[in-house]
Length: 485
Image (cartoon, rainbow, N blue to C red; front, side, top):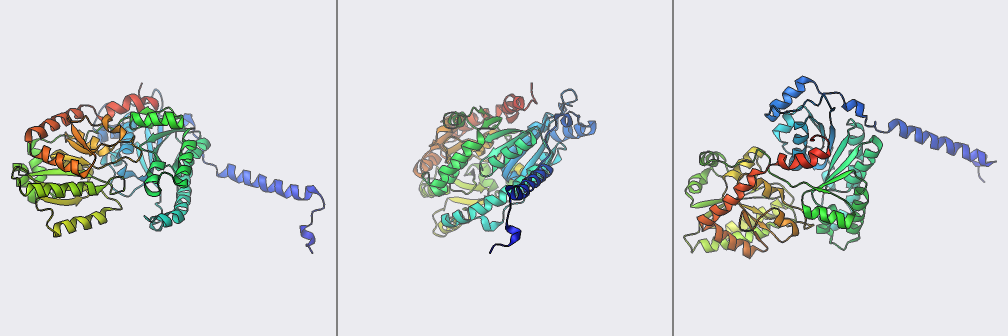
């Protein structure tokens, strides 16, 4: 028998509790809903003291007071390590340079640019990273732990965006990762009356396809989500023209290309500066005399040690080069410095150790380094040749490391078998492209054995120094955000 307490004598008996429950839920949602953006709050100009500190931090006197048109507030969202997202840091510095207030939201795991930390108009708001138990390279385990990781990210990102930050006029979101970044950002923007701008560095589904395969249902589902949540954004920025074209054709999205350009801390070094740096840096100190005489060349490759950068290409090419150098005295020895962190680093360090043990690198020394931004910029300025192994999961993104190399006048050999390569490198002028380890080894021999050819490529790379980040940013993003007329 059913107890009398559960028996409803009329529809009103169960409609009334249901109505009270719904009303309570709505009340709770209204009370706990994030505060909305109010343009009147941003109209208060920053104090003079902040302007003076900002000018000092950015080493310029040309800092607007915003007293006439109000302050533009921007939240920059990176569901990743802020320190390893240089483009988003450059966005923040450019916004602050024009008097805007910035909150950078993301994981705080590695060093952030000193200028960011010194600028009073920029605030760092960290997100709690997901537990390491959610990280795996096994495809089967990935399918099990990925939903748990996404759930963690949903809760932590919603909490930080909704309750740990003040509402802003703009939210600038890095994509990828797309899941759950785009959905949570879009929901928060709706609740807080904030304009959403997506900065497309690549496509999230194309990176997932490297792990699962293009035909996997999860990849197709991820693409559908990426398309759905991105279409309602206020504006879009892309790193290449090719990416803007894909967004228009496949996503029905109009985007503004904003090409990466080197910031001011990447500069060419004088001969005296090179000598001083090579003698000081632990990774180069014992080779300094050989590097300065030219009997050994310094090549640098920055890598994230991930599947979209096949480091075995460089290893195979260097082994071939070392074999040829042992019988060709015209070929200089090589010091290869590999910078960066990532999941496959230990795997390749083991390979390098094996090659050394079997004497396959008799004319090449390979070392890894994790440097401060300033030391990394100086290393590029002191190097003879840069190597890019970025293969592009989508075919339409570009490696920012090449932009940094050009900022110091460093010519580049890079993987070129993707559509957007020609937007960055002019073949034979500031660099050369390859599509296999065999071609890379041939290029190393060709360029390093001919000082005149290497000098010609360096001259072309130096010309890339003329146009800097601010020159690209101001007329595109600056105008979009209302910071530049």
